[in-house]
Structure formats: structure tokens, C-alpha cells
Image (tube, rainbow, N blue to C red; front, side):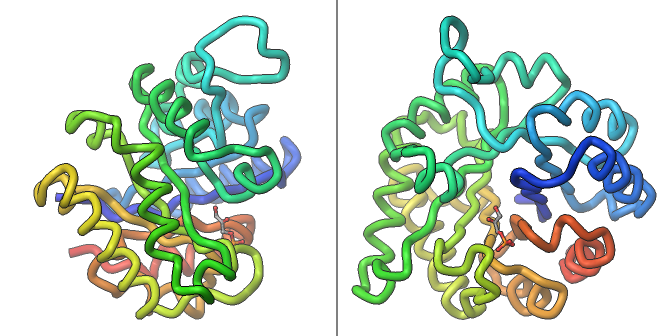
Length: 252
Ligand code: 13P
């Protein structure tokens, strides 16, 4: 049975002191152990975050990894490096990385392989631009993002994959997709996985929504059948907002 997940993408925010304070606040919240809480700080804070949350049910993720396993790649960080810091999960394919750092579906295929072959879990982000949606092309875009980066993985890999649908027009804009639009897309995603890998894998994969989730819209979004939680950006930087969002998720 798939688990409910709330993940926080801190992006390039928080100094070490800010991060430490937020981690202490998070640990003190005692969120339900039925729920997975995954926090993604910057690379420089991963070791500290893993240490501070070691005996808690808060998990730590990286925001990105290299597609390469080691060698002369100045400035890059490998899957094995983050694993050796006690981190078990990485976000991949965030739209900011696609748009600002030229990550393509083909690059992401390599990154996904690199992460999974090192035993890491992947939160794979994808989603259409506003223009794709206006042209009615959003389902095709999403299907290609899934197929190219993930569909050469075998059945076993799906134990290590979490999906995060983040329509680009909803990220950091304050304009969230409507619960109906989200449910429609999440159902399409599950059907697309089912066509390729069968119903069981499709049923068990967690599909998160991300894009302007706030305390006042989280409950409606999380109550949709195919929404298994959220990937939170801006609102994850404030402990009160984040906790209000966490409390919006219904655990069966
Ligand atoms: P916001 O919640 O700030 O819109 O960001 C969403 C996001 O990009 C999470 O990865």
C-alpha cells in the first residue's frame, strides 16, 4: 500500500543557522509516524540534517545528484557521496533544473539510473508549462517526461520511485492547479504507469502534487483519490505553515 508523503524542497534557501533552527522545530513537531516527512536542504546541509534527524522519523533528501558516478566533474555531487552522508533519497528533474540548468528528459534518465543503481530513492519531478496546457498538450508532455526518464527502469526500480507532478505555471506563483485538474492528471499518470508496468505497480506508486500548496488549499488537494501528498516549496520554509499543511493530510 502506498504511503502518504509530505516533502519539503527548501531550494537555495536557508543558511546553516536557519536550517538548523528549522530542523529542530521539525523534529519537535512529532508528526505521525504513519506519514513520511522528507526534507530536502542544500547539499552543504545534508550531513548536518541527516545527523539531526537520525533518531526521528524525519527523512532527508538531496535536491539533485550528478548523472556521473565519480571522476573529473568539478562542482558535481554523486549518488554515492550523498549516500555516504546518510541520505537515502534525492529529488530529480525539478522544473527549475530543467529550465535553468538545461536538464532534459534524456539527462534525467541517466540521473535516475545513477541514483537507483546506488540504492537511492528518487522523487522524480515533472509537469507541463502554461502554454502546453493552453494548447491541450499537457498529457503528451507529461507522458514523454515519464517515458523517457523512467520507462527503461525494470519493475524492481519502482520500489524506489516517487512521482511529483508539478505544473510549472503553479510553482512559486501562488496559483495552484485546481483539485480537479490535479486529480485528472494524477489519474492519467497512474494509467500511463499501468499500461507499461501493470496495475499493481501503478497502484503502489506515490504521486505527489507540487505548486503553490499553502495551508488554505492543502486539504482540498490532498483529499483527491490519486494524490498521495505534496512537494512543498515556499511554505516549507516556515514551520507553522508547513505543520498546518502536514496536518491537512488524511491518514487512513
Ligand atoms: P512552491 O510551493 O513555492 O510553489 O514550490 C513548489 C516546488 O517547486 C516544490 O518543488
